Length: 246
Image (cartoon, rainbow, N blue to C red; front, side, top):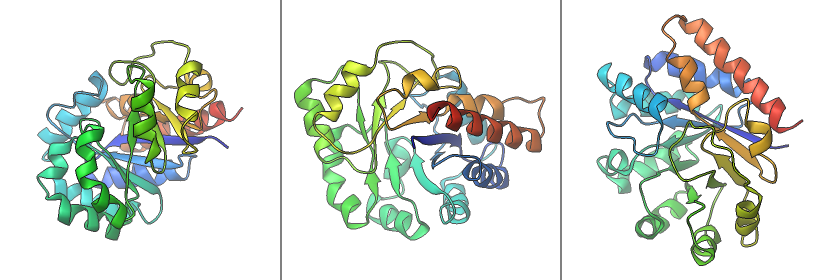
């Protein structure tokens, strides 16, 4: 069974909605949830997620809201935090990572923390049994891929192409997948540009997919009320889960 990871922007449009949406996704086929931490300059994210980030911040998102959401969600859904390093660094990593463990968070995804710099926190993550999710990209050399994946935990985030999330660029991922799986038994999940049209193709040879912009697009539709947004995301999750396993 291949896994579905779903990203949603925490606190958009409000904290209680995020909790309700997260729990609904957990009941609709999502295996792992990424709670996105709104940030003013989300450099690895496409325009939809960037827009949701800015809207959440305009509506008053604070880091403490992430902790409150996590307290309700993490005991019921496998939960990760996805955010940019400054958001976590400001909270003091030595305090934050143990707190994440207490809340039941299983990992962090930090796209702007290079592998070499992440090594400074390796012991902190390991001691608290929190995964620092590894990224590999098509531009990485074989030597670098081997180094990155050798200590990977939970899953490897395979960047499907060089760019930003939310684009449906098509490419042959099999050579890249093979180059990763040569060096590790850790599951490899494909991210960037995955939606209900591309999921079936992108998951070939991989162990799962990571979907963000397709969910956030529904959240940004002003014509939908809260229930309709949750229903729409739940239906999308069911479709995606079926696509990657059919």
